[in-house]
Structure formats: C-alpha cells, structure tokens
Length: 372
Image 1 (cartoon, helix red, strand yellow):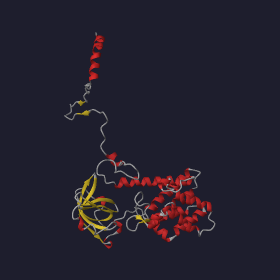
Image 2: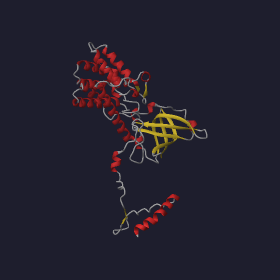
Image 3: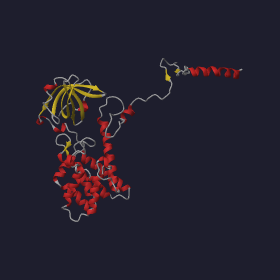
Image 4: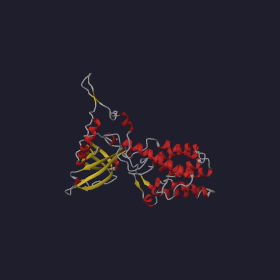
C-alpha cells in the first residue's frame, strides 16, 4: 500500500510517494526555461505539483496516465496545498497496486449488483421486465456496469459510480412514484436503470477516466438506444410505442437541448427522471467537493464550475467561533471593574464647500432670532 495518500499530506512536509499523472503540461518561465505543471492523484484526491529545476532531464521520461514516484515539499499556494517537486521517476505498472490510485465506491460491487437485480426483478410490466433482464443478463454489460464511473469528472466519477448513482435513482423512483398517482413506477424504474447504460462504453476506465473513441463519436445516449435496439430484436411482441417512451426517456434525461439532450421531456415519467437525475448528481457533486476540497482556511470551498458557486463547509462553520453581534459594544478586559467601552459619537462632518459655508452664514441670523 502506498503512503502517504493525497488526503494525508500536510504543509511543510517533505514526502516521497507515488501518484498517477492526471495531467501534464510543459510550460515556460519568463526567461524561456521549461517547468512542469502536473496534476497528481490517487484514490483519495488530486494535488497540484510544479517542478522548477532540472526539468529538461525528466520532462520526456513520463506522460499523462503514467505512475510516478516523486520527492518534494508540500507548501501552501493560494490557500491550497501544492507540491514542489525535487525528483520524479516513472514507475512500471507491475510495481503498483492499481486500487491505490483510482477512486472507487465504498460499497461492495457485488452487493450493489444484487440490489440492482432486485429492482429489475420488481418491474411488473412484462415487456419492461424482459427488456431490463436481457440487458443485465448480458455478460459484458454486467461486468462493465459493476465498475463503470457515472462520469469522467462531474459526478460519481469513480469506479462503481454508475451503479451507485442508478441505485439512488431507483430508490427515488419508487418513492416519488408512490407520491404521484400519475406516474408509472415500472416505466420510471426502467428509465433509471437504462438512462446512463451507454456510459459503460462511452467512458474508458481501465487506466484513468477518459472518453472512448465510441464515446467521442456517439455519446452515451445514442449508445444506450443502440443497446436497447439490439436486445429488442430478440424480444417478441415488444410494443413499439412503449419502446418509443423508453427511448425518449434516454434521449431527454438531460432536460435541455443546451445540456446535450436532443429532445426535452414531454411526459411525466421523463420529466421526473430528468429532475431526479439532476438532483442526485448535484447532491453528489456537493458531497464530493466538501469532502475533498483542499482549501486550508475559511468556511467555503473553492469555486465549482459545474455548480457555478462555492459551497459552505457546514460542519466547520457550525464548529467555529461565534461572530460578534453587529454594533455590539466592546467590553474592556482590564479587570472586574472594567467599564463598557461604547463607541464615541461621531463628530459631524465639516462642510468645506463654498456653497455650504454661505448657506450656514445665511441661516445663522434666522436661528438667532428664533432663540431670542
């Protein structure tokens, strides 16, 4: 097991450890010399790293998605940890344990698979039941569904993230279907199980998370529609209009055209699936950012581009010192007989304009007559 992990790093600590190279850029200093700007990671998070000296000797010896052994100093830069690299060396794959470097669900994959099959088995509509069973019975789909992330980096971006996300949606689907009488629960659960199934082929997750060639060309919605079409060829008498509803739920689940859906939801189950999917992804985005944010001071995280805001670290905020009430008098601490120090009354501002001086002069006789 590697040590230390990103989550264990402390300021002013000299470390020797190994990481996955998540990104690599060769940049130039003001005088033209190269320096390295890297994003290093392991299963607990990512770390900004810079190498300023002797860069020409090492910059071509490794690349993105390689494993490297590094030595360097942890410092704080812009309120975030940054590793200043002294040495860096590429590691062979056989010298590392992949589970140390790729984030994964804390839940057991086989336990989640059994839970998913339970939701699938509970679909009473025979046509939808047979479709979902045909998909999950496929050995390659089953293998990939257990381990695929739900996204490259936005939400549930870890091994097992897809099935964890889908299980959350299945629970929400059953809960909301019982609340809204107009909702077909079987159709909604089917949509939850198949809406992102194309991601098992859209994403590459054997070594880092990226898009496959198929994912770049087609995207997960079209891949999912293809998968369904392949299975329906072997299912007799599947209602064509029911097929259109399932396919519509897949291609509309992002909700808006500008978010990548070629169609917007036009019936209740499709609309509800979109909102449940959006809510679950945003809740996971919030949980993950608050848990992994590397801001060293303050009660707020760094800015989230996907959520378009910073987030409050609620536990840190509630545990912190209470702020002084606005306008409260300061209390002197000189001893038991110390008096309350009240803010002095501010003097009226002096009017230094020529017009103001002449106006005051004109009003003085009037005021004197009133007092006489």
